[in-house]
Image (cartoon, rainbow, N blue to C red; front, side, top):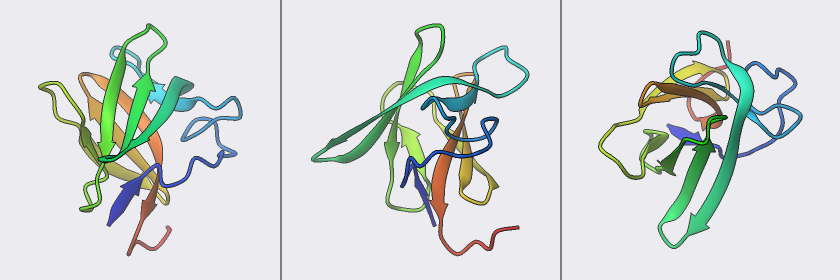
Length: 112
């Protein structure tokens, strides 16, 4: 089971999840490597938690955190979010050519 951004604690590894400056690692469309250059906003409402990930160029994606084990889904738009577990406590979300590394609670998985 997966719950994206269950915590926004900072990671010591700035190439993966949340950097010291509050940014998350991302690879916007066309970027080969992940760098901590994307911002993450959390919005909680009656429907649950929505994450808004902001790219350095001003583009953004809205992701709805699910409670059914998928992690996140696209909150709007026609493109689907593809979620991959990339490590203990971390997922990669790919949507619209952009890729994001997000902290996640992964239940039932033993850290490697």
